[in-house]
Length: 70
Image (cartoon, rainbow, N blue to C red; front, top):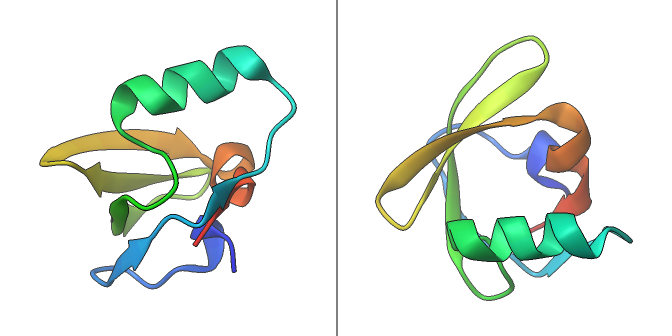
């Protein structure tokens, strides 16, 4: 399942990041978003969601949410 399908408030473990963009992979890694890390959807907006990764919160768009497999 992708992060976009995740329920709010439940902690999930990232299984994979499916993107062909190495720059995007490096950016997500710098945020702590990589395989094996816990991630929680805090809230949702129309075109994005707020996630909690390693005690920090980030807003990511739906396209990126579809690339994060949990």
